[in-house]
Amino acid sequence: MTEQELRHQNFVMRIGRLPLVPYFRPGDPEFADAVGRLAIGTHAMLLAHHGMLVCERELTAAVNTAEELEETARLFLIIKDRPYGQLTRAQVAELERLFPKSI
Image 1: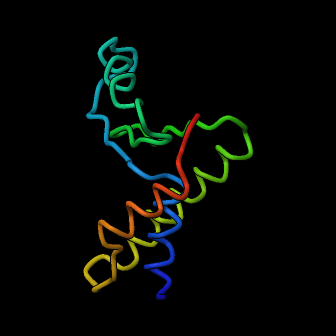
Image 2: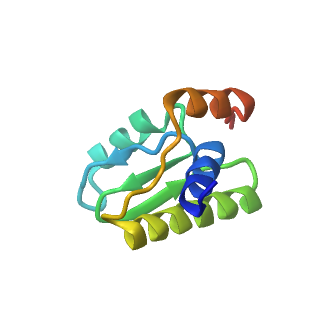
Image 3: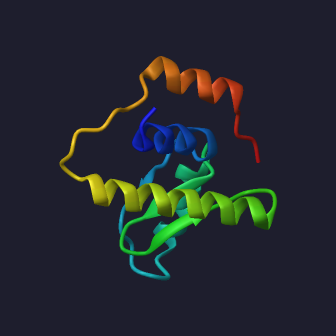
């Protein structure tokens, strides 16, 4: 398994689905509504032009998830146009079944 494939596997196991919240200005009530709608069934999300949001039961788990997300983003920026392997839908489904995320 290549480093990229291993990183993708770890991302699926630790983070799973990663929605992107569109940009809202700070303090916009619609921002909170958008985050609330997308937060169902996920532990992390990207906030356009703001950063990331990670939710876990314990601080250590949240830090680990944030680090995994940052490392995965760094890796994707490094490999950009280079070919890389991705897990199949069946492989992702198996990981989600074996490592369910529940807050």
